[in-house]
Length: 396
Image 1 (cartoon, rainbow, N blue to C red):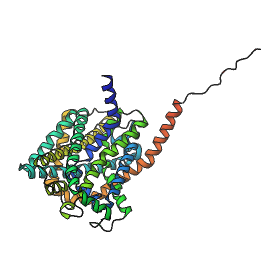
Image 2: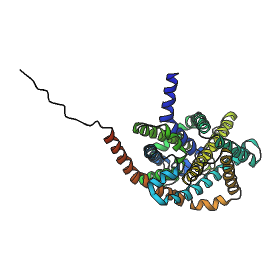
Image 3: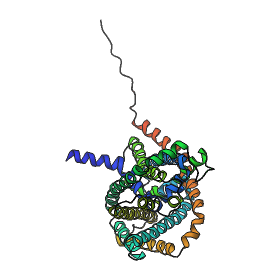
Image 4: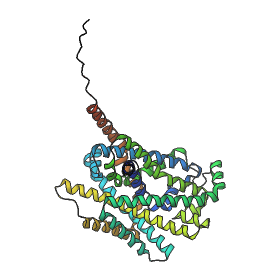
């Protein structure tokens, strides 16, 4: 029992924050492979630089945010942003809500389309299933969400290993040719700096998922746990990225893959994947979409509860949390179905830069300063006070 308890503590302190981050990150575009094309794979042999920059960025941001949250007990994004940018935290609220609606709308659209394509069921069946499951998860709260997303991580990695093994083994010769020749023909104007910046921009846009992990930091008790947990989070968030990247290199620069809405489906169809793998892909896709929607909405609900607490009121009851969740999902589904997403998406990069300005830069400056200052204060308190020992007379 003691060993089991120790293992549970290790998992909750070092691995669970990364599991939640990876689960919320890998929805919609990531799981389909579309984002990997846009944020790296389109650069061919130089695309790995974008993935490397993403790994460094995700790891660094995870370490800083985990430590900031742990030291100052800032378990919701309102508290964190108030500490970093003061009264401007309301700007982050606006950006977060807009990105949340866009991301969930894209996922609702993807889910409905994939369910319709793979099963023949109506578009709204997939959307409705997502809505019901996410509503139930947010009704029951943090423990059930952590359990659901832990299972999702296992499913995701089994899926990605299966998909990658199929595509990469059959296309290994072409991958070698692309990398050896330095092929960047799909985007011939790419430079090292532009590839690296693309990875940084990808990190900036995805910082919006970080608040979903803050409730897990309650388990951490030391800087060591923040650092190791942050590095594990960075790995969990980027290993599937590299699996997808090398799979796409097996077809580079084929536009039928690089221009596809769901590159994974095209690649598996080209390699004549067995039918069970397509069904498994559908399961993994659905699970990741639910995880992303659940995580982002859960963080938003935490923000609302914090606002209520600050005004002297009690947090939302379970039923109200479920109702708000369903309302957000319904609004996103309507946006996706009626094409408003295309109009909003024109400002998508602007929102990404806004997240960089409101969270990434403050974490690297104000956050780092506050972390260093607080840890110095803690060390001073913990240092033993040296006292002079009384002299002992020696009589001969």
